Image (cartoon, rainbow, N blue to C red; front, side, top):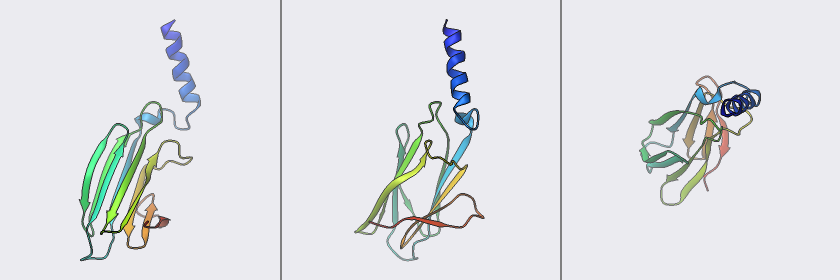
Length: 132
């Protein structure tokens, strides 16, 4: 009986996912500081339900990257909170398994007017958020 239930669960999962074993695929998120040189430092705190990546300082021209595998239940979600100087901050989701279109690489670039993303080095930057 347990074997039959296991076969049903795996079959259901495979039918309802576009890429078969989605949870074995590796994803990467990168955050790059493209703020003006000699300006305040950028602080970032990123986490998921299971992984707290800690608070990081990213200096001008530097990046912070991490990679991960989606969980079996396709509920992986990472968010980041950004601080720049005494008055600018913003928090948003940087990866979510429920997004309609998933990319192997999500590159976020932080600029003085807001946040941009591209999905590979050759892709153009798309503005997604302004500072609050």
